[in-house]
Amino acid sequence: MKPRILAVDDEPQILRFLRPSLEVAGYQVITAASGTEALRLAATVAPDAVLLDLGLPDIYGKEVIARLRSWSKVPILVLSARDREGEKIAALDVGANDYIEKPFGIGELMARLRAALRHVEGNALADVKLQAGPLMVDTAAHSVTCDRKPVKLTPKEFDLIVLLIRNAGRVLTHRQILTSVWGTAHTEDVQYLRVLVGQLRQKLDQYDLIQTEPGIGYRLKAD
Image (cartoon, rainbow, N blue to C red; front, side):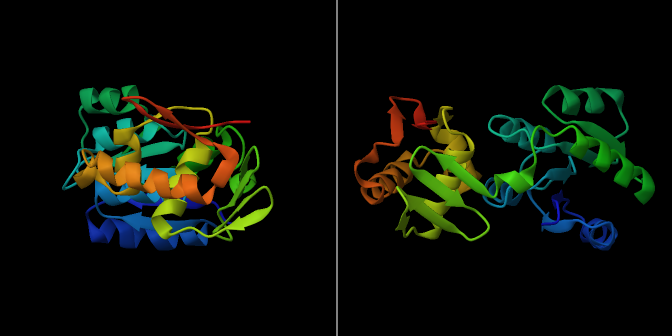
């Protein structure tokens, strides 16, 4: 599988420039024009790296970085015309791996991207099949089994179980899950989440895999 790159920029011409350059270099490219869409895609398609513009129309880029870092170690390279030192420091402080000023040369971008990918712990190719106890999720085949029995899930249920299993053993807050699965417009809609978790628990039957952390969120058992 080709490494997946999520390119996030609200300027269509930048995305039109990035896509062919990255594809020629052997990457699979997914694009987003807003922070909300970027967070959703980061949770569902599991990119190997993110190229992120700071000046997004809905969520400021530094907030997108902070939210991603709350549950993901994906390399984040900031692409921005902002040349103030304070902006660079702030982006790096909240979790960006690198900072490239616009305009930039494609050669420099590719070199920085390769360097970031080399530092990733593990390999996203090994992340296609995820397991926690009896639960197995195949993100490529979009399939789930529990104790080797197929489990049929709705798209939202699948998004949620992928998010939970990628963070198995770790508590995810209601807000983190709602942002990843439904987007930032639903960060307070905890009832949506309770209903979805209830549906998942019924389908996973007796295994008690999803644990409730009262007042905080949920955790998927790691073993």
